[in-house]
Length: 536
Image (tube, rainbow, N blue to C red):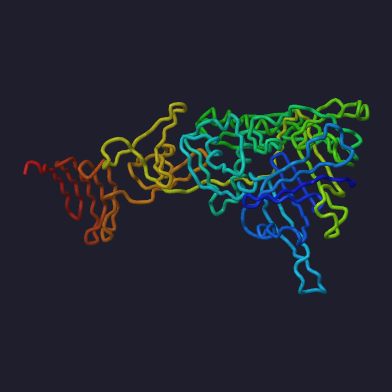
């Protein structure tokens, strides 16, 4: 811990009106800055002589924005470093009103305010649980559709420009706890990308590579109280990817030099498409990267160089001790923690001053800038499938025909149905496979069959049929079974087994326009009949 004079300014914006809280009014500041965003809290004191308009606005539920700038006051170089600066949304507000106890009839003397805050992306996307299906879209389209005016997201990751026949968000299911923020972190992590918050341009960045800085600065050893070289935990396993498809069974082995023989993390995929196995192998290979060394710092005064998450720094031997194991390396800051408590906590002392002394704890963690291991915050994996209703599409024959249609993917030769989802007014693809029937039955799903579809991120399957086909159901007193073949009432074959006066009847009737043939077996009789109503 050290004591330093800070020029810290908190600006609270409510309903487009800015209220500036100077350093002398601030009592505590806590700030955690990570790779993907920040969070923190601050408390401050205002007297009743200040504009009471702020108290009225503060106590309302209107969206509250904020910005916080922190900069040392004394002993700064001529080229003053940029301050630590964040801006975002206030998540929680509280206020205590103080009066003089012995004078209970007096008005409030001062107010003790407290706010909790985060960057806007976290605040809003952590409360965002959409259920949506996008057809012929990219993940970039999905991000754009879910980005609001309060923040900016840049998605230049190559994967986000890949078009998919279907992208499903199932975040509104009752048993799902993953928000859209969790979904994005999971998706990027599982596709070997990175997510970082650009503190300079105030935006979230989704990319294939880690953040780079234009300049590299040298920290002054006089600003650092303690430093430690850290070797992160090393993965000691290899990975095996099993494809459990009976048509394309195989094992892909992924290895790395630091693994212990016999220790594995196995993964399973079921697909007949070779490119899907290749893509999955590439994603898993990224998880086997061995982390490089880190440096953790504890400061003894505010750094005299521009220093924030994403900054590149070095420890030049001319300005540091010679022979340190990290003298020749360049590092990237990935985490900063700062806690500042005003030295003078007396309620009205120094209120309104431009700067004030604080007791400060400030630490930083940094990785070698060439470190290939990605640093992600914790996230919740989204859950699938999402069950929705749809109707089978066929573009063969007349609109009233019970025809089925097989579509074929030009790239993979995979056969599929089209199913119309009325909620989103779009068609999605489901595999053309029996799914719920044994292989010796061939009953493709025909036009307008009402089905329950289970949607995954980029796929779907028909879970079951939800209704009897037209003219298939028999009267209840028949206690019968019925198989109906064909296109429509004028072009079909009906096979029925039912009971007439408690005696079984088997009937097979073929109909084509006005031409009909009937075979009927009942008690002590067999009926063979053919007729053409047109001849009558």
